[in-house]
Image (cartoon, rainbow, N blue to C red; front, top):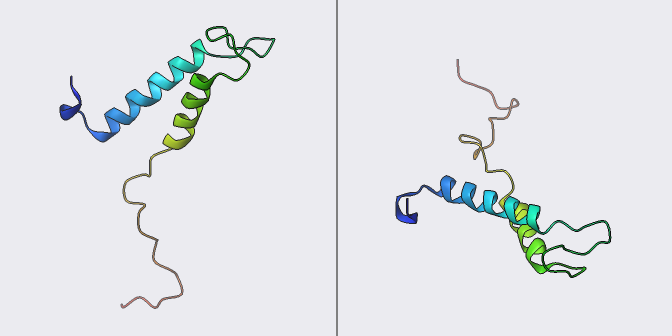
Amino acid sequence: MTAPFLSLAQIRNRLILTARTVLRQHRPGPDGHCPTCRTPACRVGTAARDLLRAAGDPPLPGTATDPPSSDVAQPE
């Protein structure tokens, strides 16, 4: 499928899956160096971690508004 036919949630999920795959490939070894890039501070791994941090958890439907406060008198 191409992007115009994907929902925003599907695009977000694909980005997250790709970032996780990249992190598996660029996970630092015991010496602290990336096995793919052979550098101590892998820019690709950092970008994938930043993407996962930015993606976070999506807001649940129906939680955009605050619940009614209990101190307001409700009509009977």
